[in-house]
Image (cartoon, rainbow, N blue to C red; front, side, top):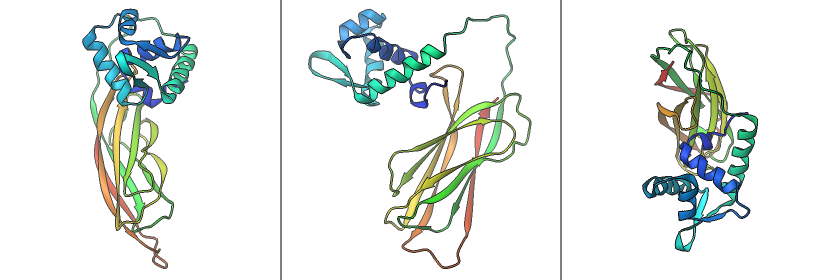
Length: 230
């Protein structure tokens, strides 16, 4: 079982706070109690709790009382399921260190041009074949967000990237504008939940028309170099 991406993006202390709330009969606690139970300093607690509140896991009430939101409650259940199926592995210092190197991969976006207002349209996102061999697969996440599209919530796709090409199809629907911006952000995930590196990204503005031109099936391809550590 894999930890959901939104939980991987949290630091270990934030995950500990969520685990702390899972042990409570009622998902509500005072700041002092949380700090005492987890051994957090005021500074560390303030940094962690701000992130949890900003991301919507916790809600702050009066007198430094914190409560799990509905999203926080579901996230606690996801974390508990992950912890149950994935016990911590013992440390093994006997394994030799692997020298890492930086490899550039070509991120590609292929989309019809123009797009049509209110028409759901597939766009393809992925990576071309690598110019050099990968020593081992790396886990990458591509996030697609839209400006002037029908959804403000980003879509995500995970790639277990090797030197072979890999692609995924997203569905986008333009709003009633003359163009829509497609923005791609790429992250590389590490072994630890908070080990997330920004690998690069790009954005393109694609024209939008009110109706489909007859007989037009034009495609446009866009690319950018992405840094991968392997």
